[in-house]
Image 1 (cartoon, rainbow, N blue to C red):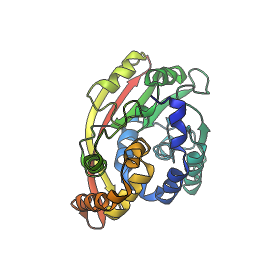
Image 2 (spheres, rainbow, N blue to C red):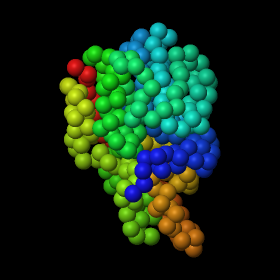
Image 3 (cartoon, rainbow, N blue to C red):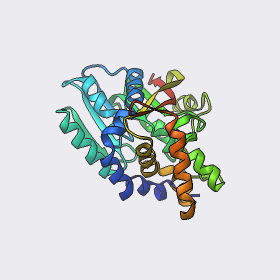
Image 4 (spheres, helix red, strand yellow):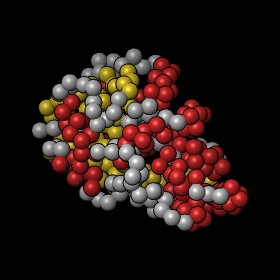
Length: 280
């Protein structure tokens, strides 16, 4: 079983950084509805101090910064300094003056107690080696009556994954996610993400599973190229594909994704889990 430390460098690996830079605009567009759902769940208010965990290239931190206005501030935290450089550049392009970044581990936050009014995490909590420890750290840095809002993937059996990595799995056999590796679908079971918050001492916990638009503004070939480049948890699966099989895999994936192609975009629905709680 790989340790968290063993897994971390993959998130900032060169192939992923190139892809993140190349596809940053389209990736943000694809995730726009999911990002908005998290921001609405978090309900940021002007003047709030906000921490966004596993912020990567800046979502939802950039959207949160526009909501808290100039009197508030958003800190985007990620383990990868390279991805945060992309986030900083995006924030500059948006003219944000209330945005900063911090390279750190969510399980050991470099902030004092009761420092933030709100903490968010979009598609990151699933990958923390110790989710309970990270949740307790969030609880520590939240002010009294502060709010946390996490968003995670629902089940693997949904169009974006089953028509891509699901097809690869059928070709090569074995599990889609190697046992012991970071699992994007760790909280697909209803109530499991709420349990993390409950164990950390949060109150007024709410959890919902929602299906939201997940629209790639481009071709099926593009979205598959993007997914292969950035989907770190599936790297062991992709590495199992023999070179002679890639043509067949790509053809089948392109054909499957073409069924969702409409008006120059590939339109999926993303099944996600939203869970929130208050520090009492």
